[in-house]
Length: 216
Image (tube, rainbow, N blue to C red; front, side):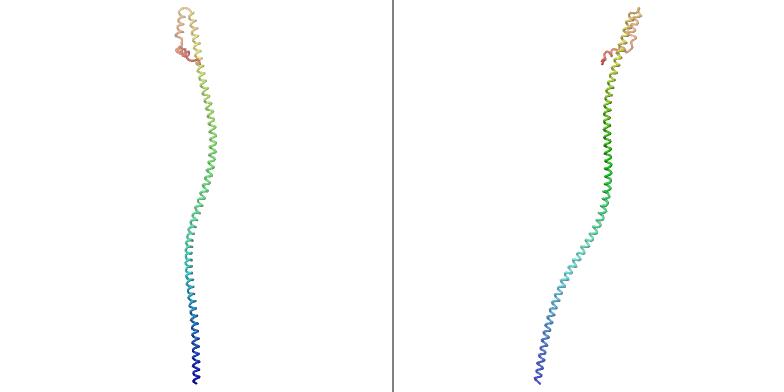
């Protein structure tokens, strides 16, 4: 009996020892697995922290990009408004340029007409100047001919007056000679009248002037 009890006690002790060993092994395995899990969890947490940090950086980058996009969108809107204004100004300038070109063409056409008219007027003026020159030459020639004719007329008049006076003088002389041959005192009276009285008042002056004047 005692041996059986001892054997039972030994068996129980062995069973307890085995159970303790198994528990220890199970506990060690559990602790090992727990440590592995903790390590995995720490690594996962670290990975998550890194990923969270990366995500935060990405979020910040995205926010920065969005901010830049908003700024670019605002700038683009401003540029579009500026472009619209510039386009309107360009259209106005184009219209003004077209109007100025048309006005310039009209002025060039008018200028060409004026130049043609000026050429015509210049030609006419040259013809008028040539005609005036010819008229002036003709007037000069006519003046010279007039002066020559006046001189000839003056010389003819002087010659005629001189001839008339000489003829009158000869007639007076002849009459005087006839009176000298006539009877008595009447003849001498007639002579005195013809030598002093019947002569015209300016005859002696004209006779003297004609004798002094050049014959031409």
